[in-house]
Length: 435
Image (cartoon, rainbow, N blue to C red):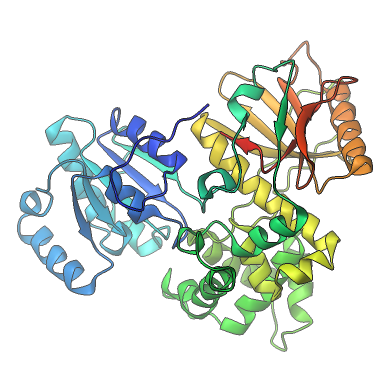
């Protein structure tokens, strides 16, 4: 199980990323933490840094740019590790940091953070990739374990050891899940009164659609079109929907001509500011020649972005459990990604030409993996999920790959996490899951 490292910063909520940052600083001269705005990058980086330069302040950025041009050594003379926040606003920094890391020949010199992928012009200013000097770390909004709603008594890491016995209590009910889907994992929302907490996602959505998608690369994009695209994306959470299908959704509300390249450019802008994070396909060794679908599965980085795009709240989700199920999948994928990162793993999906799907496959270095189906809960849905896991497992060729370390149905509801005696499938409410 990953550990949350002690912190002296008052009011700081420990993040699983703290352990990853600590580990990477011991092996690389610089680390780059990337993720959406408001997910806690700067706060976590400040907690792990000895000095800082916050380039989000316009006056600080201009002074720093001038100093970097005049005296690079003086600009980067802060105590190590030195935090440089929103580094991509000063693209020359990349090569300066890389050079300084080479000269000092010591790990743990710099922590860079970024809420946007540098555009083409910024890339052209960089002469080196940073390979061997930088470690890249993805940060996402808080998992339920980090925000305190999940007990974390069922460790994802421990499941890879296939415990024979499992029994842990879950306190989250469906109405709690509906609220958490809408609140999201935004640190600033955690602990606020419910109505105030729910506003965070809408504020984030407004910032993305009205300003951030244009600022990322300087290309002017229509706010209303971005809103329509994000609404369409919200309806297709967990699906392998094509660009043409998204385009058709947009055409219902867009009088202008619209081709797939335009839709792609809008999606790329959302990807560059870490609003969307699609899931790659898993390509295992199969006993048969079944064709595997390789299209990515569509997800926002947090379910609250989808609820804000749809304009819905917890009461609406309680009245529409089908939509709740799709958005719950987004929440589970967010948490699984956070936990998998701590295990040096990745999260993929499986779907073949016959329609057999597996919502999530957590794959670790060395080839170990776990198969996961995501369901709201209830006996029939749990049975359906367990049957899907068994059908997929039966298709895998264990002479060419390992058997799954575990099979799990991850649920929204249920009084307990437990192991089914008949097939060994774990049934785990998200309110029990941790790293």
